Image (cartoon, rainbow, N blue to C red):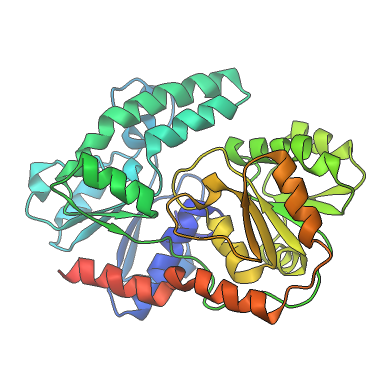
Length: 364
């Protein structure tokens, strides 16, 4: 369920709803709640919101289908979708089990991609510390790779980055594929001039991709510089908390509220971003592009986005290069010329323009 919109996948969905509502599109939202309560915020954006419970547990794992797909099968959902003839937007691969159902053969079907899921799950398995979760992620990756061929039954694929769009064009040449960046909370550039107070790394720290990135940065970058550093995000694991405690110049903001996180992003002098996974589009990257000052990240962070380096945005790969770039600009003011460069960088991520493209697909 895409509210509250407090992590990557649901951010794209929620703000897509916001902009489709602005465009006059009537929305019938079908979502799986798994612990989240019915949302007046979603109901205000939609003609109707349908809520379903996921069928979680061991039985959902005992299937050739991916667990993420099997647990979202619902006869009630099928009946509700068949009650009208509207176009269907399938959000990520987990929702796609009806794509090849003959009852929907004449419906317009649009697949919204967020990651090459089998690659994403395989990479998560490499960084997962819990042995059972690691096994689950490896098995799920194999199932997702086999299941992915179902997207050949859709009419459009909307990919969040150009590299993944090219992948779909090669593997599913009969399907129309469009690069459509993720929707997000930012409507204008709000980066502040001057010099900030600290270096910031942020993300959902309960996800292995993000806590492993934090550990890598602590070991290879943050421990080797003596500038003030803040690591912020949802539900950090104990081993990350312990790693941070070993360094007096690094502090942790555990699960800050949205307003607190926005203040951190605006107050930071520099944003350091790192990922081992070149899949999808990282929403935290968009957040700091629109709100932050200087940015240093690795190449995987920008894969397929078209974002290029400039004086305020540096792309590096080694820990040594991170340190060199951080030290070179940490004492510099973020200036008007940096703002002008940033305006060019965010031009492809304008929600209003991307909503027009989406509406064209829906109405085509």
